[in-house]
Image (cartoon, rainbow over all chains, first blue to last red):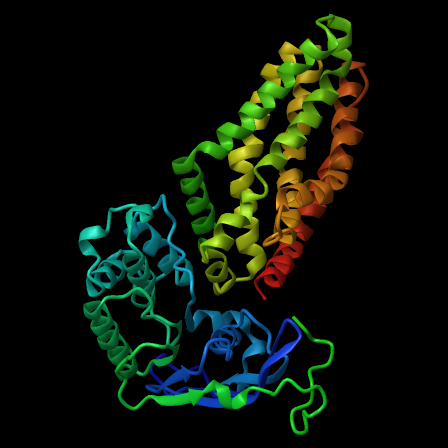
Length: 237
Length: 221
């Protein structure tokens, strides 16, 4: 076992033989991946190929029907809370409360993720600034446009630091300038040793990112041809 | 524990800004209780006899009204996923939400109950016991109700399903709550009833957040 490492030390996040079953249908099976510190993985594939499901599996929201996830070789399921602490998950919904202001929304998630950082509010302020939200800080969530909500959600990534970012189509509803800002933030995060796994249909510039084509792991809709990937046994979600 | 209070504070703030839930619950409680003298007549003896039961039953129904919003709003806007991914046991987050629910519904009901008891001519001996029974009973309603709210998450017409699931589980609170007040009014000791209510509360405190957390994980899969 590796002794307690600092945040910046090299880490590896990997998945082995992952399979996911949704509504009785095998979405993908036999999926392996590895991301190292500073690395990025782009999930590609047509609608329904399991990009979102894979991200939810990686976040720990969904249990894989088969296979395992490991952080530095240790199974993630050994300590789900440690995994949650090092992960930022950004899903389809923006989790912005209509009656709270942008800053209040962000501050809540930042404190919840890490009660010790961001107490002074500096991290929250600079996160807002990075995504061009400073002038909206006191505006209630219900007044925001879809793109502004998305940016508020993205600002969470910076307000409380975490090494692993799991982003499900982060560019949805963003304008060109915001996509540029996001690309910069992603590049900085990776330069500091962070990891990014994201799914996208849009062009997003990430030099050196590995690609994972999910349609290669789909299982044809026959019943009995799972030769090398055993069907999950009674573990349907 | 920081995270626990962070969630409580946020839910209280949301409740205060939206306002409607607490007000609605208390208004429902008051209006329904006021209906009884119209329905069964203004005779003091009759009202006095039924006062404990009417108050407790109405409080159960009122507290149930707001339950389906407990997790529903967070579920719809994606907050629930992030709450589940908080680096702390999910049971703790759920307990915080239940505490906030009690503070915004159970507590106002408790405050309103003695006023309505006067309206129903409850004897003065019953008042302290009424408060004690409400103080022990309403948290149980929030705790057990939270399990139901988590179970019906994402279901169509969850509100109706919720009442079918939860009302039978509220029966012990009703029996021992009314039992305690009746005992006090008749000059007997209310202590055994209140102790049993306390026991149910202790059990629910330990079990309900975890049961609810398990149901939430299921709902998100």
